[in-house]
Length: 397
Image (tube, rainbow, N blue to C red; front, top):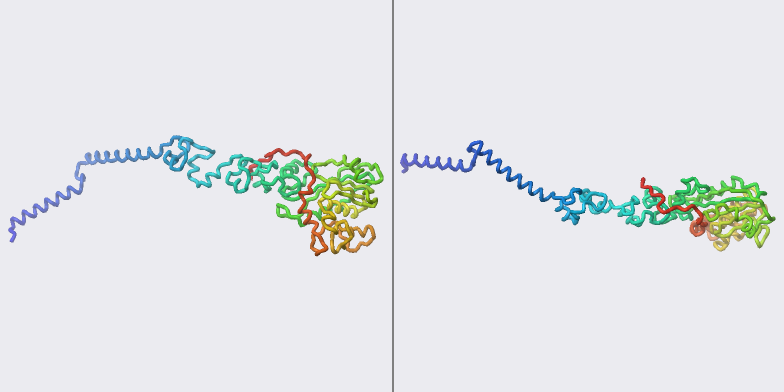
């Protein structure tokens, strides 16, 4: 049994123990205010100094201008001492993916990034890969031409010529289009010929614009232009090819400038016949036409234009032949087309038309063949105004 004295003594000890434990866990809470302040200041000083030193190590920047610490540059395989190898700061490039960083380079200064040139297949070190006078950027963004092909539409005129000459309003090139095929004919006539009727030329132009010939601009048709140049005296009774060369060829103003020459006279003769009404070389640039009044002259001209674009008897036996009727081969290249003028048989006359080959085994696709050999039969452009490389270097969208 515990005595009252012992109980009192034990309680005092317990209370003293609890008090000591309380002082130990409350720290300096019971210390004077000035002592607490000194301790807090010391702790803050140590923490601030340590944090500052850590940051000083991280942000040290030997090149000082790119916004990246040496530590970051080294871990990313950059050179800390070289601030900026191209025109973009290392800091801005670091925030982008590697693809975006490489896209910022443009070694040839044409406005296309190196990555874009890789996609297009153009030369990243040459601003005008195909040498047509238009920068790769302008071909891709502005004119929609092919930067790998100097003649996108394959008509014999370079893209540079088809852009610059119309812009300069240089006759007879106002209608040139780099995305649609063009053919040009200069027309001279002897003094005895009154000239072609406008309707003749209009119908030929309409036939060509309606042609099922594809173009890079996703439109069909060929732009054919006529330049009526001058009236010249006729020195002889008949115009043969030899007489043309000796007497008339010098009047061909646009010779070797991508233009074909048409001479219309009152009588055209070949070595084989004096009844010839048209004479031309297959794929050539010279056409001799005998004037025979309205429509007849226009159809003769379209027939000889067909020869200048590559159509011949060697291409199809129905050309320059009466082997097939105009129903079997509905083309101006069919001699039966001229029965109306020769035999006064004007049934089934086909005017101002090349065939599309839809008539079966006796038919031939004139337009398809013309399209296939278009560039091959393009006349020379050796005397056209020179277009210096990269003369068009627009970087506007």
